Image 1 (cartoon, helix red, strand yellow):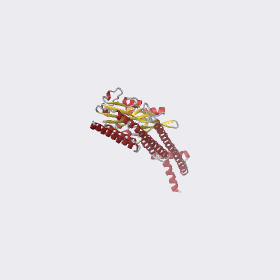
Image 2 (cartoon, one colour):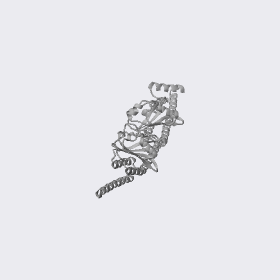
Image 3 (spheres, one colour):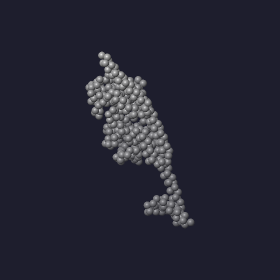
Image 4 (tube, one colour):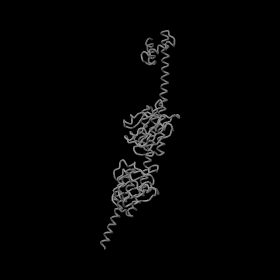
Length: 411
């Protein structure tokens, strides 16, 4: 009996030693840099090792708290991470987040009435399923799922420990998310400054618009950002700038305003958000969106002096819910881009007016020369300049300059 007690005692000590080692690793995570992806991947590795798990998933609520998004996985799921999502209360994971309670199922988890199947996740066929809420200040901010291919007993002590760890990790994850948000806001601020500086610079319009799409794409983590302006007739949208390297996107035909999604933006003068353009029947270029890997889109109208002149389109690779802060930032950028277009038009009009005035002065001088040299009337002198312009295919300004130069050489 003594040997048996001793053996059980040693086994317990080993379990306790394992738990302490596990807890130390979790503590180490709290001392890491506030990189959310790094923290989540480390949690997955530790959970996998401690639970000897075949699968570990971490879901977090998105910015709007509308649904849970798969953010980290033990097995490679490059396409699924960031795209697979669950509504509150949807599936076992959604239920755990909603109820703020742990669920432990030792076998045939896929038969649970709350279970939701994803065709893209082979782990859905695993037998055992442990789902634990990630807690921060008493509220669930995400869920950790631990799975085993074969039936597995999740002992009460183990479940309690994982639950406690999830609470501890919750604070670290939330801090990392806040840190990322702060960095994002700093980036947005810097980006807005760049856009403002470009508008007040002496750069040409094409350079300004190209800078705006590059900055916007970087700021909103967009795969493609483009600026489309109305043509002179107001019938079609023409791509004036994009940071995309795709030749297919750059060379796509002009978009008709009538009956197009983007056309609605000009009519309503309000932002348009499409969660998945690949499934939107009114989106004209669905095939191109599938080929280029475009999913969510926001289109913002460019308004100047109560006149709609174009739109800025932002596309994301993964499904994305644009929060109000992103909409507000894009609105500020769009307003500045519209100002840049308007300022350029005003400058062009001013230059044309200046050039027209200079041309008129030259023609008046040339008429005076012809009237003096050939004893012509003002009207006859003008007709002579006009005829020479037509015959030589040169501008009247060029003809006038030649007449003035010849007169000066005679003196």
